[in-house]
Each structure stands twice: as structure tokens, then as C-alpha cells.
Length: 375
Ligand SMILES: Cc1cc2nc3c(=O)[nH]c(=O)nc-3n(C[C@H](O)[C@H](O)[C@H](O)COP(=O)(O)OP(=O)(O)OC[C@H]3O[C@@H](n4cnc5c(N)ncnc54)[C@H](O)[C@@H]3O)c2cc1C
Image 1 (cartoon, helix red, strand yellow):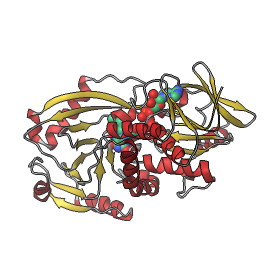
Image 2 (image 1 turned 180 degrees about the vertical axis):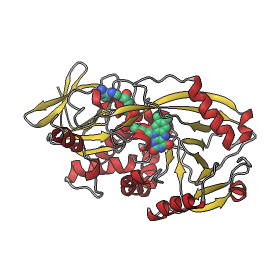
Image 3 (image 1 turned 30 degrees about the vertical axis):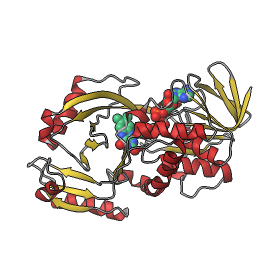
Image 4 (image 1 turned 180 degrees about the horizontal axis):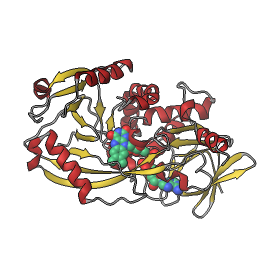
């Protein structure tokens, strides 16, 4: 039986970045995945690094979101240098487009939320926003400009992080997923795999929306899949610089000239089908923001499954089982939260201290809820 300092269940961006962090600290690390790693949510994502809170209910995410934004440049440098691969990072800012009758008081509220979080944001009129992005619709009434926002190519980043982890000595086992926790008297001794067991001092569950399927994990990480349909467009007549937001619709330009358009949020179990209704919604939204996209070619369509949690917040940290940590439930912010997740899990495993307060995201919050309901 193989034995490591740490084993990670799941080779998406979260699992890969944790493995890279731990191997960089000198630990012997292995990653186990049911399939070829990096082909789930981390592949399907839009790649925006956007800490802006969508509403005040998500404000508790802000401190770790801002910490992650600060860690991002060094994280990318480490991944690119170690892997020898570029991740398509661009920091050209974002525009939150207000097409309907958004009033001045709502704009003031959005600005206050942003500025309170330490994010630069300014209100623009429609014509001012079109000076920054000439392809925008003439219907645009107002916009919020967030000049510091960034995005990257999440497929390149996931691939490069896995490669960097390998080069740091991480052993990666595709097609050998975790079936169950290997639990013995309050301690997690490792994982039961498809055909064997693996032993480790530390076990990290980072299997995205599939985490709750690993026997023994659901009480700590009751995650469910939230499907997002997406498409990639190419249009010579449109040269976007900034990420464009409008409600839940967005357009994200890539360095290779593609424009990623998304996304739906659907609770359909583990279904990954692309539907006519989903594509219609995205295309209607895209054309309403940038009318010239009517002549765009559709290069690709896909759907991915976000790991959502009951309170839509991530699930991060140690559990009441010694040696067991959870790192999942990142829902719509897993790319944003990758560097801080890797850093905090790495700090805990090497020093049992963390530099950010992760108590609000504890995996134990669901156990408390179950006990207080008498379940
Ligand atoms: C359409 C869409 C758009 C998004 N846009 C953004 C965005 O712009 N910005 C942002 O920050 N976030 C975004 N997200 C969210 C982000 O992509 C996710 O939160 C993040 O990728 C989750 O990463 P992960 O590694 O936890 O999960 P995943 O990438 O899903 O990886 C989980 C891994 O676990 C493996 N696995 C499954 N079962 C097992 C098992 N039993 N044992 C071992 N391994 C197993 C899987 O094969 C997979 O490789 C988006 C997501 C989607 C779907």
C-alpha cells in the first residue's frame, strides 16, 4: 500500500493548486481523480477573477476574495514559471452594464458596496461606457466600471497547475477516484480508492460537486451541482477589451480572440446537456449587450457543473476527523478563490495556523445544523 504525507481527492483547479502548494513546502503528495484531471468545472468556467459582491448576502466572501486577488500575481508567476505554460491572464477591467431602468439610488448602493470592500468602481453614463467599449449597444443607460478586474483562460490555468504540480513531484493518478474515507476511531487514515487503499497523514477532499458522493464526506460537504451552459463566439467585427456583465449574463474576451458567453445557473442534477433554451438565453443576452455579435460564429458550446453548497459559500478547513480537510463548494467563485484556498490549506497542514479567518466556511457548520435539527 502506498503512503504519502498528503493525498488529494480531485484533480480540478482546487485540488491541483493545493497539491502544488503542499509539494512546494516539501511534502510528498498524490492526487487521485476518477477521470483525466481538470475536465470538470475548472475546464468549463469563464475564468473571471471578480471579487465584486453580487449582493450584500455574499459580503462574507469578500475578505478571502480580496486576499485571493492579492495572491493571484504570485500564484500565476509560480504556475507559469514551474510549468513553462502561459495562462492567458489579462487585467483590463470589467463593466457592469445597467440596461433597464436602474435608478440612481441603486447605482449608489452598488458603488457603496464596492467601495466598502476596497474595490475601485466608478459610475459611467451609456456614452461614457461606449467610449471604453464602442461595440456596446446604444440602448445602454449606465454602467459601473471596475478597472482592476482580471480574467484568465481557466483551461490553460488548470492544465498548467497540474503540470507545475507534477514537476514539483506530485504523483497524479487519473482513473482512480476515491470511493470512501478511510476512517478509524476519529482519524482519517487516507482514502479507499477504486481498487486499493492509500494512506496519508493528511487527506484533502477537493472533488468539486462530486465530493458528497465519496462515502463519509456528505455530512461535511453537502454539495450539489449547479449547471452552467456556455458558448465561445468569434467575431472579427467585435474587439472587446473588458469583461462585460449584465445580471447573470456575461461576455469574457480571451487573448486568442474568442469571446466566452455565459452562463445559465440550473439545478438539474449531474446533467451536462447543452439545451436550446440555454443557448437562446445566452445568445439573446449577448446580442442585447453587443448587437454586432449577431454575425459571430459559434465555435463551441458546453456545460459544466459548479460545486454549490446549501448557503452558497465555500466549504474550507479541518473537520472533527483528525487529518481530514475539505476544500470545495466554491460555486461561482472557484477560479477567483484558488490561490487563497491553496494557501490556507497549505498553512493549516504545515503550521496548523491560517492567515485569513476561514471559520465562516468551516465544514463543521453543516454538522451543527444537523444536530440542532435533531437529525
Ligand atoms: C459555466 C461556469 C462558469 C464559471 N465561471 C467562473 C468564473 O468566471 N470565475 C470563477 O471564479 N469561478 C467560475 N466558475 C466556478 C469554478 O469553475 C468552480 O468553482 C471551480 O472550477 C471548482 O473547482 P474544483 O477543482 O473544486 O472542481 P472541479 O473542477 O469540478 O474538479 C473536481 C475534480 O474531482 C474529480 N472527481 C470527481 N469525483 C471524484 C472522486 N470520487 N475521487 C476523486 N476525484 C473525483 C473530477 O473528475 C474533477 O477532476 C464557473 C463554473 C462554471 C461551471
